[in-house]
Length: 124
Image (cartoon, rainbow, N blue to C red):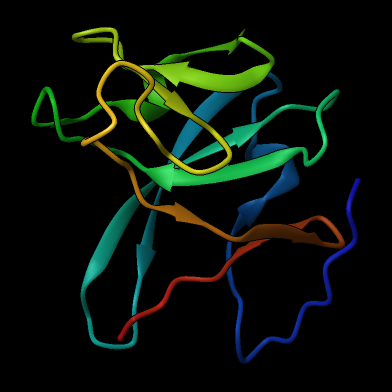
């Protein structure tokens, strides 16, 4: 797994490694200093490099927070998640939609600090 330098001023804890489900997604609510919160879909793929991915949980095509419930698969050598509603595929690495290049999910840096999963979200 790629090692990332974690400084606690840049990264915020989101969950524990034991909260993740291998080869699948989970949803986490990340609160910001401004009081706003964001629903994040976290994916843990033990055999991949990197092993952790974080995307917005909001599916802009379906208009629902369902991305964490999607099915993870490899398409043309890229790890993707398919939305459970309209089956659009989003690349885990950058959130780009395979079927419609105009549609994009935000992706976030995510890493392990020991057994704690940390995420970096720009609150600006």
